[in-house]
Length: 88
Image (cartoon, rainbow, N blue to C red; front, side, top):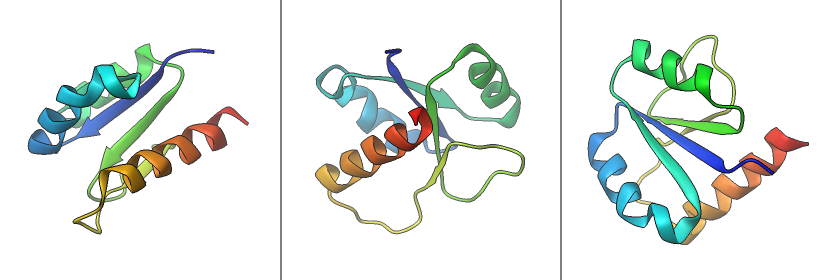
């Protein structure tokens, strides 16, 4: 199975936190500060999940991070569920 990839869209502080945890979570973390960069990263990946604060038009595999604070273990659990949905 391909490695799971998280693309964090316009969330610099969240990206920094997740980047520190990247090795322990067995995920590859990407930052997309703009939609142009998001499109480039998305085009290069197969198994990905986009994390953003609001829905992005014409993009699938999104997780909207709008209810904060959230416990890290619950967040990881949600990511795993969404990755399973994408794969099946």
